[in-house]
Image (cartoon, rainbow, N blue to C red; front, top):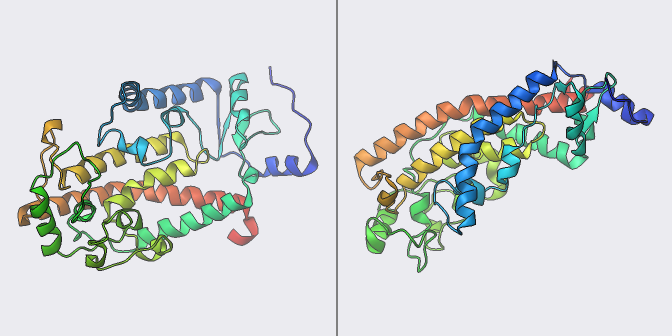
Amino acid sequence: MTPSLPATSDSSASAAAADVPQLVLPEAEWQTRRSTHEQRVAPWIAPRLDRMSRSESHPIEDFLFEYYSYRPGQLLRWHPGIGVALVGAAAEEFLAHPLYRRLADGTVSVSIHALKPQRLQFVRWLATLLEAVRDRPPFFGCAGLHEWAMVHRAEEVRHPRWPLRLGRAGTDAVVESLPIRCSHHDAFRFFTASARPLNRLQPARTDAVRLEQGGCLHANMDLYKWAYKLAPLTPSELVADAFALAREIREVDMRASPYDFSALGLEPIAIETEEGRAAYENLQAGFSRKAAPIRSRLIELCRQALKIAEPEASS
């Protein structure tokens, strides 16, 4: 039995009508999709919760939960994404979220018209950033020196439980002997004061659209951040795809770092050698290829949302 529709104002009714779904999922189908998503992400979440209960942390597995703001429960929660309507009484639970609406036919869907102006402004900015990165040639010559620059001549390091492979003097020598060409502000901001002048760029947060490029491990890892920041507009399957890629990237990021994580079974990528830098560049190129379809899907999602919210501007 279809639940009775709540009373709505003319403006909210017209907004809901404008959010025409492209896909209507019967309850059995969307429940299956939700279950599949939960089964996929559970192996990432359960060990994190177990370590938290013991006040332990893993430098690779826990990074995506500590550096990024999406909590395990949020990653576990399934959303269909924009353009999808859910059938059935169980869909009522989604109405607890402020961006969901019941449509005229009784189905439940995310409503673009429920977005506040500042959120639409973010969606517009994000589309511009992602398109700029897509259209800019990737650069693979940074050698992963960002983590090294974060400990240059430092009294304290970011991972004090783990030794530096080359020791302090050897680590500093690598930083001072190789060109540092980091284009990503959220990596550069952690450089030590002595390492910052050594970087060929001085990226500020406002430089993202101008400088970010698809060869950067952090720019590709951040696709996870952009995917969840768009939630619940983003289908959870896409968030999970971005998370999976970010996990792969984080492991390589730490293997190429100055730290010795061999106790975790991680073979170092010795970027202080030509062979190590070549191996790192090859992995960079692979991540750039893997990131491209995720970035394209996020761009499509942003543009779809903006077309619904601002049809005149998009026509």
